Amino acid sequence: MEVKVLMTWNIRANKDREYFEFLVKQFLPGMQRLGLHPPDAWFTAYGEGPQVLAAALVPSREAARHILASDAWKHLEKQLMDYVTDYHYKIIPAREGFQL
Image (cartoon, rainbow, N blue to C red; front, side, top):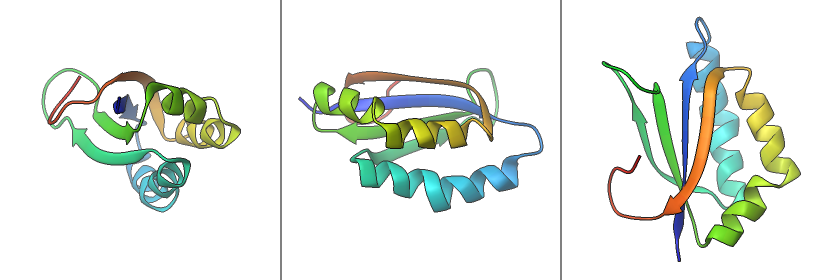
């Protein structure tokens, strides 16, 4: 059963520019190389909650766990922490549209 890895975070103050550069040049391509296919991302412009919600499709829960336990993923996460706070993720059954 296809699953989504849902990730949330807030961008560190004064790191917007560097964050977006890292996201486009390293994080997203790295996710795709590992088998995480990012179909969705949302940015909270107003209100409460995490600033960013990103989703990635994976063929199965086992595949998602394998990817998220890999050294390559841990390296990407470590790099991401230079630009974000309050990072969290969860694995859920995939549905169409917005999921939280």
